[in-house]
Length: 430
Ligand SMILES: Cc1ncc(COP(=O)(O)O)c(C=O)c1O
Image 1 (cartoon, rainbow, N blue to C red):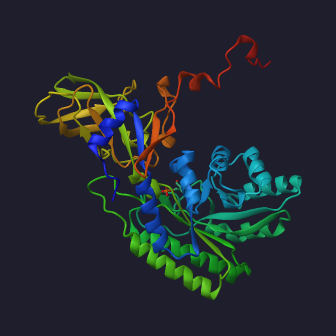
Image 2: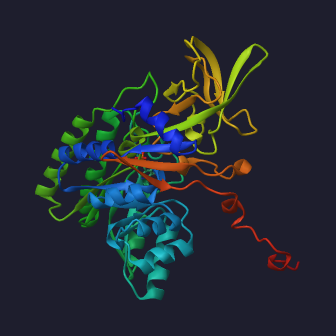
Image 3: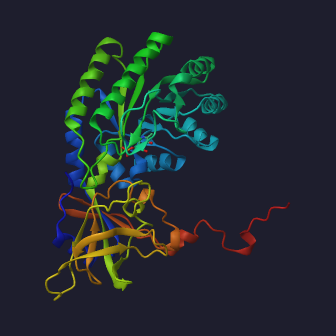
């Protein structure tokens, strides 16, 4: 399931807004989320992962619908606050939190810092003592077990994330020695873009069982169990959608059993970015040029890797083209025969390739190329400074009206962080 793309609507929007732009379907986002919510045990709370998309206006929608937010940097924490999330609805994960970031988290009293190492626990303790506060902390655990296939594995294998399950004894010893740090629970996240229904179920059940074993081994009852998520969406023709109904049913039942037996007060969490947003947006670009080179046809559009790195194969081991739809806009262009072309962006690198050897109706300057499934890991995952093109507009469609939710970037954005006068330059003596 993905948002409906209306060619006439997109064409009309290009008359009002400069390409490239992202168009989000707010009604789709709401229906999609509410379906997930209604299928899931109310004891399980959903948290939006800001890394998938850091647009404040989208985050606000999720806040209004009752979700919490998962952040992975002080920058995302600030964004979450701008979106109106209160501290008690924020959790903070990430393997490389700086002390300055932890300080902000401790000072602002967020619901939970997810510590990914023993060293981080010591930093948190020190900072909490300095502030004379109690910091609530959960431990991210890298399970001893690996859970089937997922596109990008982040647990069950050697990784920089969390602490190994086999080291739990030592971690619990440390936790018991802390005075300003309150241990509230555990977090397991085994990978993103997971399209393997069984492996998600298995990993979530395993996490609940880990919670149980904390009680059996150490007498600790978790107040917080973060089941992770990593729900994937199909991008390519060989991919099959998750059986989300089976996941929500099985995990809802499993959590209910756990609540009935051992965890009546426990907060269970599923965090998600991709599943909530990926299928809800389209990235719209305009054809600038068409040319041939040594027997191949190239179509050059005005957007690409700097705005939507994932669509140009970044972060993926398999080079498959994102689904796309082309809109012939140029008038009187007659019938468009299908042809094989490579669609590239404007950057000075062959890596800026939006579609390799795609079969599309012949494209000419002024036509539109729309990349589907673009709502997650689009702009937030892209090298926006490369070559200094402005960041794109974002538009949110809701209840039949359109809202500009990100203005076009300017050249000032790129120079803003650079010292511009001689007197501002900082010289450091040897
Ligand atoms: C710890 C953690 N939580 C949540 C997410 C969001 O995952 P997704 O967008 O697949 O839902 C990620 C993604 O990398 C993550 O590392």
